Image (cartoon, rainbow, N blue to C red):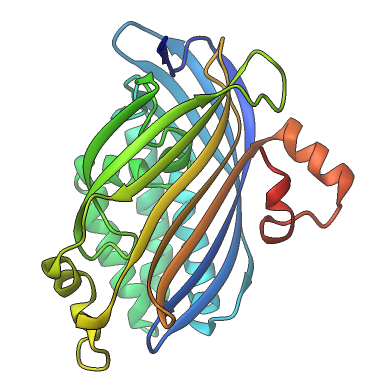
Length: 302
């Protein structure tokens, strides 16, 4: 079977909207949230070894939550997101961040935000803790790069298949979705001919499942719940599935949907759905339904 490499091949500028739907049940804690984020993504230069890009955060909005703690921290999260709202980066062809070109500007913004936060932190210990955490990040460029890499845009846009020749199957060691234990995963990436936008685009289907989950996994992953739950009786179902539409000639993402589910029991699970669409796709969805949201209309996406 002929293979096709997925990557960034031409300069372009595009605006994207991401919807994130989270359904979490942690035995004695539940949380449902809906988030919407918008970015402006520009590919400035493509070289043999790397790519120069700019990423601007245009909006960061909490649509819904049923958890009061999330509401309390949403404003604080929005303040700290300002620090990442203008990124000028060098990435490699897999989407891995290699260098922050506007690092001095980001650090200067952090000093401004830090000053604001410290002025009100005496009355709120949570703010003081958040300032200390971010101070450790902004004093270490490696941690700052890692934070950008694990952010929603890079995590979903580039995912695990970018820069690779497809179809492909590979074994990866990655955390579970609760981020409490490493897992041996088996991922497959296939190119489908089920074109949905125009016949020059690639449709990529991804699937990831654990190779096996032993006793050690359950102890590491859910040991924190062992005093209120018999974790020896758990039988976790865990899977990542996704579908991407990418313009072959440029590498420009048109739309993507990724689901990540970890279901250990009826009261112990995490279900997350990410939908990332460019403005052309978003406008089409909004024409059909002015109240378009991820949970109600996501079946129409690719």
